[in-house]
Image 1 (spheres, one colour):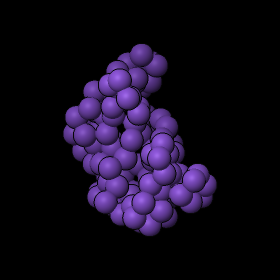
Image 2 (cartoon, one colour):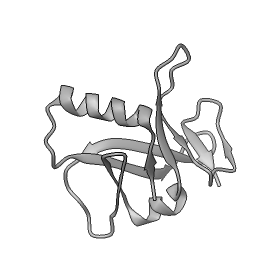
Image 3 (spheres, helix red, strand yellow):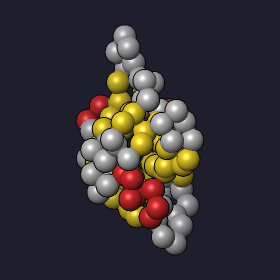
Image 4 (cartoon, helix red, strand yellow):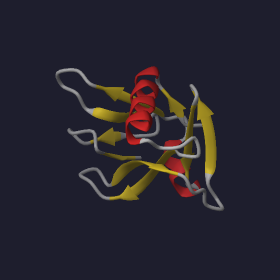
Amino acid sequence: MVFVGDSAKEKITELIQKSGLTDSHFVRVSVTSGGCSGLSYNLDFDDTRQENDQVFEDNGITVVTDLKSFLYLCNTTLEFSGGLEGKGFYFDNPNAARTCGCGESFAV
């Protein structure tokens, strides 16, 4: 499962309302090769599901990921930080053995 923290839920809800997205939109999360540590997170809104998508609903937010990415994201929590050192959205991933300094990429 991919979880959504309260801070991420609030920001996602705000972005959906400001962008005028419909109820058919969801959060798509994926993992691609790249970044300082080897793997990078991608986060976007989408309204089209693919054949092998894994669909999760947590905290009132629907999160969709492809099967390959789910192998890296299992039990990960999406969070949001807007403080002085605001990172924006970030992932609390128990599968990551290390992350880069900016938190944009990770390795398993």
